[in-house]
Amino acid sequence: MKKEARLMQGNEACVEGAIAAGMRFYAGYPITPSTEIAEISAEKLPYVGGKFIQMEDEIAGMAAVIGGSLTGLKSMTATSGPGFSLKQENIGYAAIAEIPCVIVDVQRGGPSTGQPTCPSQGDVMQAKWGTHGDHPVIALTPSSVKETFDLTVRAFNLAEKYRMPVLLMMDEVIGHMREKVELPDPSELEIIDRKRPDCDKDKYIAFKPDEDLVPPMADFGIGYRYHVTGLVHDETGFPSNSTKVADQLIRRLVDKIEMHKHDIIQWEEENTEDAEVIIFSYGCVSRAARTAMKALRDKGVKVGTFRPITIWPFPEERLLELAKKVKTIIVAEMNLGQMVLEVERICNNVTKIDRVNKVSGDIIYPEEIVAKVEEVL
Amino acid sequence: MMTHEIIMAGFGGQGVMAMGKILAEAALREGKNVSWLPSYGPEMRGGTANCNVIVSEDPVGAPIVTEASAALVLNRPSLDKFEKDVLPGGTLIINSSLIDRKATREDIKIYYVPANDIANEIGTGKIANMVMLGAYLAASGAAKEDTVMEVVTEIFSGKKADVIPLNKEALARGAACVK
Image 1 (tube, chains in turn brown, red):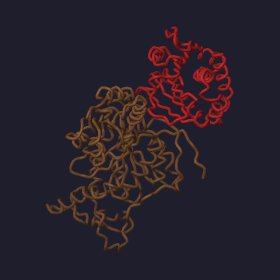
Image 2: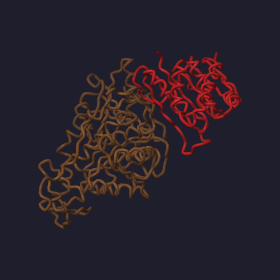
Image 3: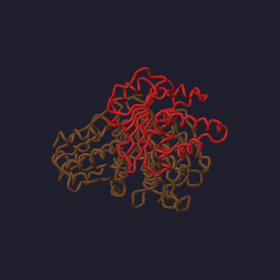
Image 4: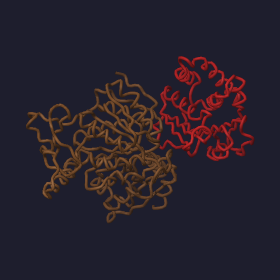
């Protein structure tokens, strides 16, 4: 099949990716700058036998996604800052009850209703710590329209493989911008479906993990009976007051991701072999970083770029290796310094760390990154 | 081919976003790499709106335009804001129907296009954006008029097909302003 180049918006690419990955249920409440994800899902899902429902608010949207996934449908919701805050409690529910689902946050300026039409990266720590209690997190950050497609597919795959909510942390620029995209042929995509039980229906123990720490998941309503709760539960799914059960459950949830982190973590680096300075950035800022790097390389400055594609879990091992070789890491992000805290935690005793930050609602310009690199050299 | 980095700006409702999308779509069909980045306030009609379009042989890096090869300004606040962002030797196209001052730059090419007046003569004020786009296409060669019309024809196929010839006329009248 001939690949056709299309002019496509990031939010549209997200829906295309979701449907290609097998999304058949979307519940949510539209909010700028994510609204097109709801609109296009509403338009497209009926054609593939899926269902779209607009709920009364973001909380209900997240709850419905959990319910949809429990019945066996790949489910997604999308929102922006204010809605992401509202969804947090139910994201925790999905984490403890091990419900595969995808939550898209097209980040805008905050806090509160903030700047609805402006880009931001102010929710990246909320992605990690937004819901209470210790829990595993997988969060991915696309930096182009095409990558939004790819990472939406991947978000579903990881959610299904590890039975957990996966966050796709977009930003307003990536959501709204249009660029040339050649979508892959659906037959070329790797699509992962959740493990389902193959035991007799009366022998099913819903939260008994396999060796990979992931329990097989039965679709609700086909005869496998089990209990689902946000309370700490034993392998049957029923609540438990045992400290031992609580310890085992929470540790297993976190270990499930630790065990498979090399499968989950992805990053991209460019010109790091001889770099004296590395520009660390993610999402739309990494495009400015790349432009800045090219301009600096033209002047003979040895600059490389590092871009986490998976921000949680963090690509800590590779960053530390690179940190040992460079004079400075510059962290450019559209917040007052969030991911830089993680970079500092890992690299503080190894190299110098500097920052480029912006919270005006304007994106970071390549020139601003160039100026910072020239300042630190 | 040079890289075209274009700022298009005006009030919400003037069709700034639409003309940017049409240009990006046309350039894409001619095999170029393109990006279209909108910027608008929380309000829509009547608020300020602008978009950045990049047309390039190479993959597009930062989609924001700070040093523009061209700016198309449809209202006075846009001229005030973006005149300085045009690179020396670049192009500034001014909607002189609504903008009551002249440009102050002397190191760029400046075209005054009475886009709203021409649009009203054609029969619909809504088409002023396409007059501006016609002027830009003629000044820059960023995309061919035929490809732009191919895109316009697809957008307005069906019930709105009667506006297709008006668009063609708008592009031609705009182009005539830069010759």
